[in-house]
Length: 100
Image (cartoon, rainbow, N blue to C red; front, side, top):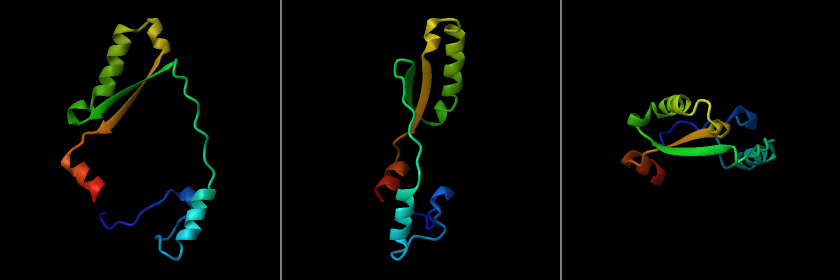
């Protein structure tokens, strides 16, 4: 995209740019690498809150946790853990980078 080399995490042991010649070797390295099992999610104890990230929402996670502590401090609802997740706004730049 911007002509920078693609960097892989060190665990894959890929230290050269991918070419037609070394692609199969490095592909096998990635496939053979160990991976962590994802931990099971207890959906009775976790609540996911998704919001669209933009500059005006920069402080949303901090404000959310502050308000939650203020209004639900000793409430049984505190047994449910909120997990905040953000995604980017669909703007022209993002659209162009995904389609080019």
